[in-house]
Image 1: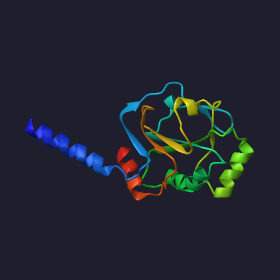
Image 2 (image 1 turned 180 degrees about the vertical axis):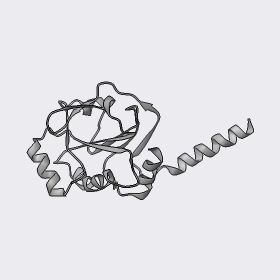
Image 3 (image 1 turned 120 degrees about the horizontal axis):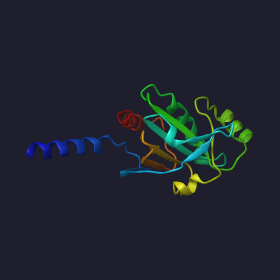
Image 4 (image 1 turned 45 degrees about the vertical axis):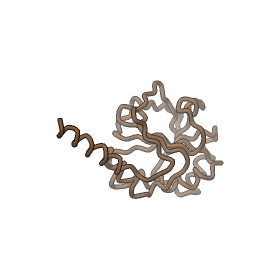
Amino acid sequence: MRILILFTFFITNTLANELPNLKNLIVLKNPKSYSNVIFLDNADKEINIQNLDSQLIMLNFWATWCAPCREEMPSLDRLQVNKKLKNLKIYPINIGKERLDKVNSFFVELGIDNLEPYFDHPSTLAKTFSLRGLPTTILLNSKGEEFARIIGSINFDDENFINWLKNLS
């Protein structure tokens, strides 16, 4: 019994110490399930999170008119190809009801080469995920359950954050 208590204490403290020091990161104690989460690719093909096969999924909600979105997008782009993260898939989902040509221009202007734009279907995900502002990033496990979210912008190049993600995948 004493060994079990010590083991539990050690694991809990180890996991707590591994959390990156981000004031806008919220880690859920119990992952939250969603049903019928569908968004569109740039050819209007439906993507359902239940059909995704990545171990770690990030849904980044943004708009071209959002200054903090513009600020974080280049580091989000670099995160997608970070060699430390083998099983991460990032879906930047535009919820600004913006046209494809405007979104593509935004990606070109910022030099976004490693991400493809996705779109809300039709503007329901903000309500589904109870978004309170942009940008917001939802982190999903392999079952499509939300286990964390980032409210507001961050620097996705942060090494502590990258190492935390690495340990999750």
